[in-house]
Image (cartoon, rainbow, N blue to C red; front, side, top):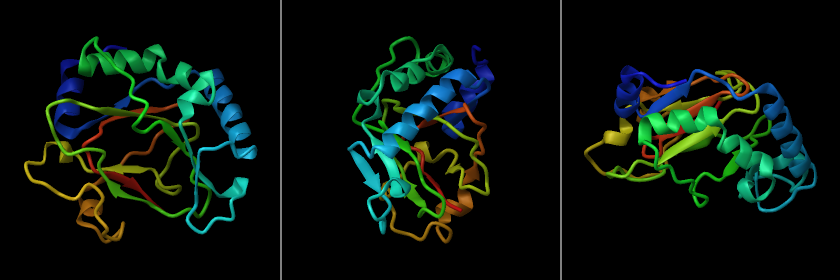
Length: 196
């Protein structure tokens, strides 16, 4: 699906775009199966819950997913994602493996993903693509994005140490619930986080 001029305008000003189409269910099933195996076997590199016991139930994030299984690259380069990215960036799209090359697992009761922005605002646009392997809701801690924060004309610590719920960023943010197989694109300079 090709974005309209209005879709592109909203992305440029808000910093995020919820792709209307979802990835095919069979591909999401494969991704879930591969991810479940990676977790069960605790294949490194893994980021653990802070007070975790280093068991499968305490895996917070699987890092370097593109080198783990070809299913991840197949999903990340699916035509639905590439068409959406091309509408925003044009045809010259480069996949970076040193940024956001991971899967957030976040077991029940896990700590918040505290406010952060990937980069300070600058001319080059880095876009993060989130692919949802399950539904993300207000109740289970969907991502929250601070619209327009990618265009801030001032410097701010990219990882403020403020309490997630007490932060002015929380008060400025919008929750972005997503369906299973959903795709969320956002400018890497936008402040974002999640918590329940």
